[in-house]
Length: 191
Image (cartoon, rainbow, N blue to C red):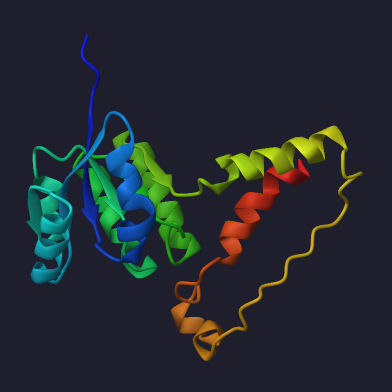
């Protein structure tokens, strides 16, 4: 029996794929990045050439339709997450979305509905709770080493920008650490 290789197609060639997730996708056993896409074709081509990735596209549908690609990583601004995730699942390819899942609750429920209807999974990149330091913190809380946790206060060191108060642009653009990430990390501690 041969192991199945996940052959990723990246939609988005920004900083998150250059520094954080992209290198990891190439290092994990059974994982290979075979194609990338950016709306700016020259950016996609340069990204692919710098990383020895064979294929590049400037059209998301073409990347999704590539028969070699069997999973899609969506690392675009949040406003396009739902569109690309739904396109991927409708093409029968699992989607892995960079956080946040989508811009609105309605988009999130639509993504979940399409996943159920197609039977194709969709994942969101909430991985931090599985990092060694967080597992250690969870262990300490569960063991009572720091007492009974009854309250958690979170303060962001970065002051809000004017853009963060724009109701038409929720969830507030891209921050280093956004509220949904913090909630994802602390929720297992409060169970």
